[in-house]
Length: 401
Image (cartoon, rainbow, N blue to C red; front, side, top):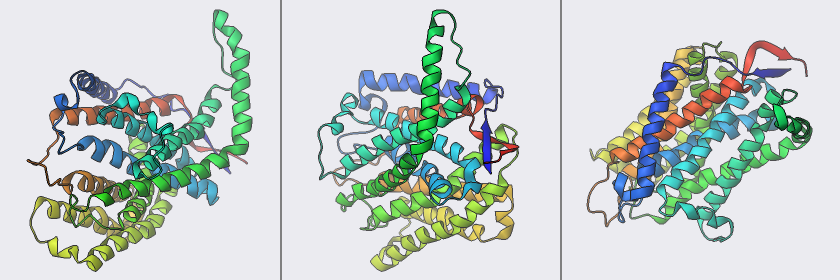
């Protein structure tokens, strides 16, 4: 069986969307101020503290939380578990938008954003950051290619341009038909490429911090950091799918997809359990548990990350009652998402203390407004796309394959 996706055609300009628009406008104003006055004009960043909220949340967390795209594609298309097809396209949309705004956040953060294209021609093969840049660039391209079928489904046979532009109807229909025929045969190449590229740069983001043993707190600094980044991203993939699908179906008043989402959480028990075992085992072997009772902001944040973001949701997922409860499942998956989000914030912000830093870092109001504005734009585009493009599967609308 194959599931037929459809555009929701719901009212777009709701009060919530208007609020998102206002937040986007405020964020846009701050971004303009950043490019006119410089990074220091709107942020608390300095030479001693070159990164903060924009890297910890907009980039590192955005990459991790977009992992649902490649994990669901792997499950449905590579392993052939077509039962999960209804959640693949929403997950790919979340990943596509998430990575787009990772790039936008990075352009706001780096000092010479106009030179962001240079790694394509100036290769430093000894640099982990170069590998991350190339993987993210290619993976964003792959995500957009994987989403082309949704556009083709919506507009194939419906192109009707007025007046002189009508001469473009035939070429447009030809291109969409060509894309439909060709992509259907070679899409497996892009699916495999997406999984490989995503695994590569998820782990490499952790490798970035291996060069900072004197700057990163011992609770997070470990040679296993690349493996921990990769396993945590894989573990949060399916919970992120549950998180966004529950919010979307609730806000759009759609039927829940519990028949698809509940089995995903059983897979999460194994994935999250692997990440938890690696994280606790690494802490025990290295003896960094001696820091847990220090009472500092760093150790307290680590305890919250591990306790509420890993151990508690893993225990909750073992309960059959939670697995079959929409609310319980949503709360548990939200804890996992927040746990991975806090982990990236801890590694890149809370646990990162440069020896030359003369004061503690806290994001300026400008940094916060830019981040909020980018997140609002992501949510607005998600709402816009599911309204006008076939992303969600209609309940009961299945066609024989």
